[in-house]
Length: 88
Image 1 (tube, rainbow, N blue to C red):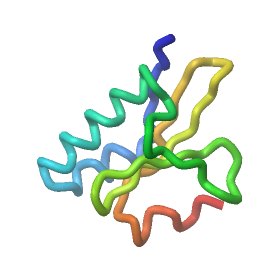
Image 2: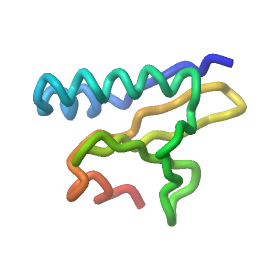
Image 3: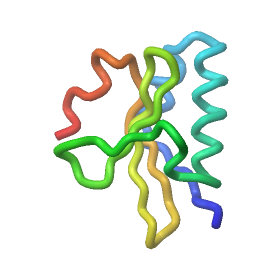
Image 4: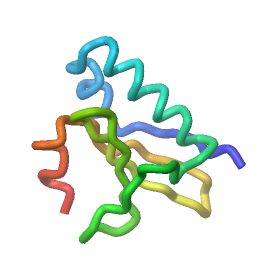
């Protein structure tokens, strides 16, 4: 089953802030989520329903898995210190 990947509008700006190498690696990980929405190393976020995170170095990708509709929504990308603020 292939999942469709959707992005929030703010994610594009967040990606543009990253250096080129990190941006490419994170986009590759996001694309891989279509085939495997819960890869090794992904974690469910506590205190929030159906949100998960994957990491790349100091950066985190917060995403939502909608199994019934086969959709993954990328919610937020950012540095580990600030990415979790405002999720609850």
